[in-house]
Image 1: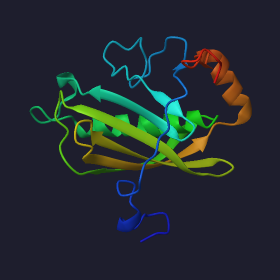
Image 2: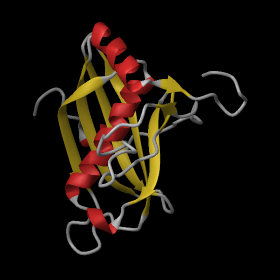
Image 3: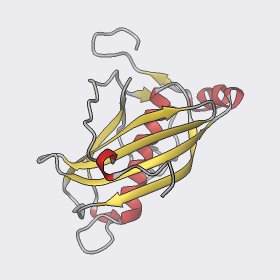
Length: 179
């Protein structure tokens, strides 16, 4: 066992999660990301939210993304986890590319089932960011899948270029002030 493997007592699914109320969504120019892009007619078009502690989305997996009959495809579950963990990184002011992703499937996720996916950063070094995520049944809170990832942070000059290219900006919060 390597030092970066979590022991069962410290697995992401077992830790207490406390995501604060979201600061509000980010807004981007329309783009084609499979997970969150509004221009991808075949994509998931996830609505992601961030807080200082992480990110989350709520959805029902469309039958178009099934593997076995009425069960979400494992690759789609991986995509959802990768996206909430990536947005947790964005919520901390940087962007990164996924270098490693490890997913544990606990229970099947049915198409049409209301789920909530959450991600949070657990370690941020100079160039690497570690995050963890989970997918839970929205009604019962039962953990359906967990993930761990490592992201390589985008260099500062590229980060500014990407923010400009995608027009990244945080929308005002519900009180009307900028977050």
